[in-house]
Image (cartoon, rainbow, N blue to C red; front, side, top):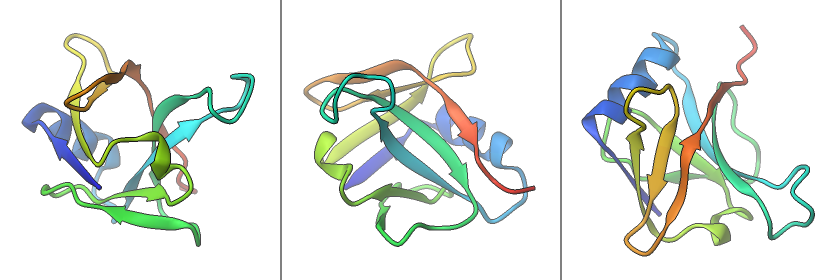
Length: 110
């Protein structure tokens, strides 16, 4: 899988991550959505990998991972951008928009 970052998205992610060697996990959150196939995409800043995480290619300076079981919910080529005027992100593919108000949650143990 590939996740292309716009310059604005990469800048915003680096700002939120700071100087620590952290990664961003793309998640498909199903909690409170009814069933396992209904969910919303999200982003988490993490400092440790789970055993089911696999790398995503971003082509930028931010490292991305995804749980291999959740990868099925996304297309192979994605684009992440910043939502203008907000602190949220927009995730698209060539065929669909996954979300226009995707939140970045810092889950690191600081």
